[in-house]
Image 1 (cartoon, rainbow, N blue to C red):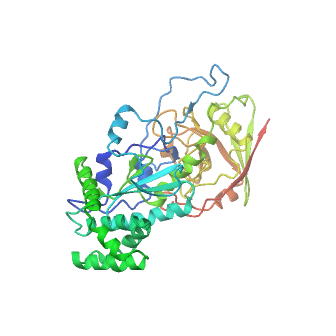
Image 2: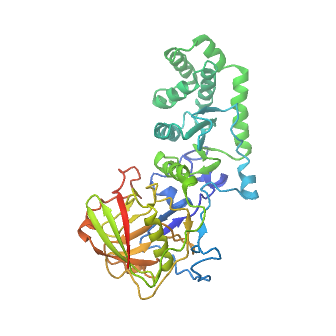
Length: 441
């Protein structure tokens, strides 16, 4: 299983490589919804197929508890953690949001999506649809910031379109013209310059603008200079692809709503995650059983406190605290496994802490219904997410902590709804865990 610990900074070079409209070539955007997961480090845990070799991770610190008596663990950094000086310098080429920008959404939104866009770029029109989805889903959490980047070398009407949006903005209708230019792109993209100006004049009237003032402003020296200055600056930093999209100041490659949604969900709950390691609550000499209650019935799991004390302690503590109540199975493949333990339901989050793997040679995935801990590619990245295998999966051996086995309720387990989170992140939410009850004997 792979778990991504924080957002990778797709800096300028990466952003350009993965954008859609370019001066030299036009490359369609990545359409697989897993691209952001595979290429972005976020707080997520994903069981990977056997083709990915994580390799055993040796552990140095074998303590179970620290000096404070709590379980040994590390606290997960926020998704948008503090930048290093080098990263900060690289991202400084993107000026912060100012009063000069056109923005949509609350100023105090937890997520700011900034787009460098071209009204004649077909992929920018696709992005506009995705951003509208985000604004509809998260009206209080998302702010959209527009930055013009007409690629005049391949889009002859793009610069005038940007000027027209500014002219409409002078009459309080920037976002109305923005929407019209993108949604009706096919109507004007192939027009000559003269025909396009006529189209703009008609559209201005439709939007209720003072058409004469709009036409005058569109070709005004001030607006032309403003757009040209933005083009010149983009050229000076090597920015020649649209849409180039930043989320909270970090360029990203997946600007689809389904790609940004997990980021929003993680940030929304970060303040509620644990800020210290959990207390030690188990006795390894005792027997622990977990009853997982779902809408279809109960599943009973025997836990292995001697073999995997950290994993069992974490699981027992979180279960008793109600952490898993209402959490869904976000990734389910009946020929592989069912995974849960992320309160956001995206696979990108957890309880807020991580701990080392506990690999025991005698425990294997050579049979079905084995309980494992989701983890990342680095050592010490196990967390609150766990999975149960449907079938034997020996290629997982030596890679993931095994801390129990499903011993009753197999029929309930088999009824968990298949959910391909990798290929369909917009699928309905997964089946819910109503509660987990721990029996200690």
